[in-house]
Length: 143
Length: 143
DNA sequence: TTTGACTTGTTATGATGTAACATGAATAAG
DNA sequence: CTTATTCATGTTACATCATAACAAGTCAAA
Ligand SMILES: [Zn+2]
Ligand SMILES: [Zn+2]
Ligand SMILES: [Zn+2]
Ligand SMILES: [Zn+2]
Image (cartoon, rainbow over all chains, first blue to last red; front, side, top):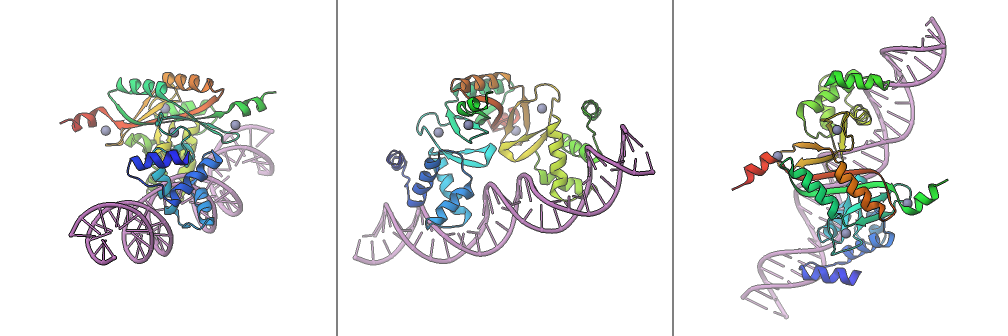
């Protein structure tokens, strides 16, 4: 995953520096949405800078290059689980276990774009995030 | 609009008190997304409390009763333009003029729910917000 | 008219995010 | 190899968004 990321970045003339790589690793390790300050704590504990811009810059870089996503509902970030595929996915967030799933959102996005076009509105970027129960937690909740 | 709101609230055993009414009026007057602190400034200038909870409580109340919406992308609130209809709308936000449109999002929501169901995920609440250009700004931008 | 629920206000603090500037590493030009 | 330029990292300081906890006032029902 990291090698793949490094290659994709090099192709764009961008570098996966130590902070950036470590930030991506941290997101990948937990595979869930993390707040910027949570990431920052980890980075600081490992000898990187301990001021907010350190984390925000690395996260912003990863988002710009399609290696991570920002979740508006949670004020949080998460590693991209399918880098290179559909980079405008819909997110499913489990309210019980915080699990995060990433769906190719083309059908949803199309429906939205069409709906908007009826009002003459041009959609440029769409945020599609759902809160609910993942399969595991739904099973657990059943009586 | 206000009378209608008052009636709907009374039916639910809730009251449209002065702060709440003024907050709703402020949102309705500008018809765009406003930050909580912007609302607070207006309230404070008119003799209401000047501490954040004053605005946040009124806004939360309005959202709970379907008279306003919260926009995740903007950390902001806006009066509901169609109270009582589809209360899980999609939002279109113009990046030029901040205009806000509210669309009945049933088709989009259905597409999302179906997509999620394929992964066994149960959608409970969905955030669907699009950034783009409203018709007026799109016209203005054309060469 | 007392009781209890609700509303409004406050203080204080927490959480999230960015501007501006100084220093240091990597690359490119000479 | 040396210098110039760009990019990256770190800092301080501040801006913005949001809530917890408590005190005082209001309202309507018992
Ligand atoms: Zn992705
Ligand atoms: Zn779950
Ligand atoms: Zn509405
Ligand atoms: Zn516009």
